[in-house]
Structure formats: C-alpha cells, structure tokens
Length: 87
Image: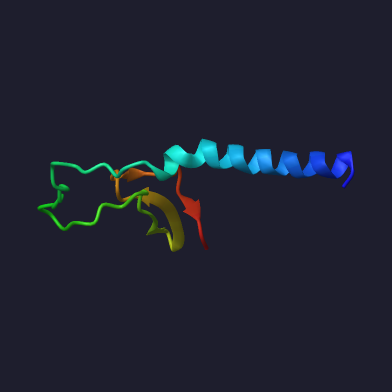
C-alpha cells in the first residue's frame, strides 16, 4: 500500500471513531420520568366556535328590483357599506 491509501484509511477510521465518541452521550441518556400524571382537559360546553366570521348575503326588494348586501352574522353588522343591484 502506498502512502495515500494508508492516509485515506486512517482518516476514515478517525472520522468514524470520533463520530461514535461524540454520539455516545445520546445513547446513554435516560428518559425523564414525571412524578405528576398527565392532565386531562375537559370542556363543559360542546358548542362549536367558528374560526372565521360567517358572512352571507341578505336580499331586499324595492320597487320591483332585487338588491343584495353582505352581512357578518358573527359580529352582527354589515360587511359592505352599500346595497348592490342584482337584477
């Protein structure tokens, strides 16, 4: 064997030996045992709380023409400032 092959083999051996030496504390770690039991959280109400606002159109008819406007049912207020002619 020439010098380059020996150097390559020794460098691989050194690399893997250092890898195992550094990673040894991970294998020796002990699990943490808690003295308190896990808490179970129960809710008293079974209502569904929406994450987003419920917005739907409201319609009205004036003088034979149909108008619509967005209404926010979650906040109980108008989502649009004006009525729009539908047809």
